[in-house]
Image 1 (cartoon, helix red, strand yellow):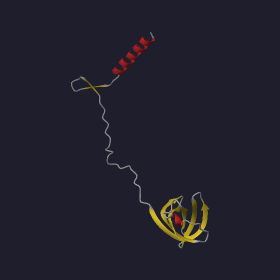
Image 2 (cartoon, one colour):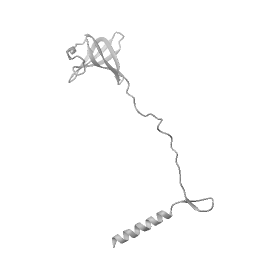
Image 3 (cartoon, one colour):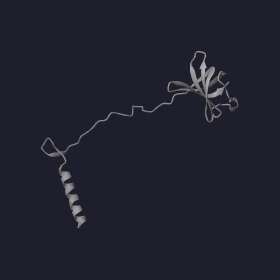
Image 4 (cartoon, rainbow, N blue to C red):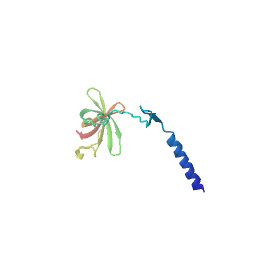
Length: 131
């Protein structure tokens, strides 16, 4: 009995929904379906992809101002002759030649080469070469 009532209710709802469709009157007074067309712009010409830029390779020579020990190496703050500070991350896995790895002390003059980027307004270098 419940199934019959449900079926009857469903039929009634469908009948009302189909009658509620808007019909537009044609030129001769006959009912036609109303169609709304929405035009969208061509999106195939828009390039939304990010393009990776080539890393900036930098060689810096300067005096070690501070050292922060890490688990695989250390980060040395280096000031060059112009007084510009660089934070060089020096570790065995990042160096092209692992034999170049050595501990440095505050006051040592070193030269590092590697990929440069900026983080929180500070120049960072991932050292691939240490001299």
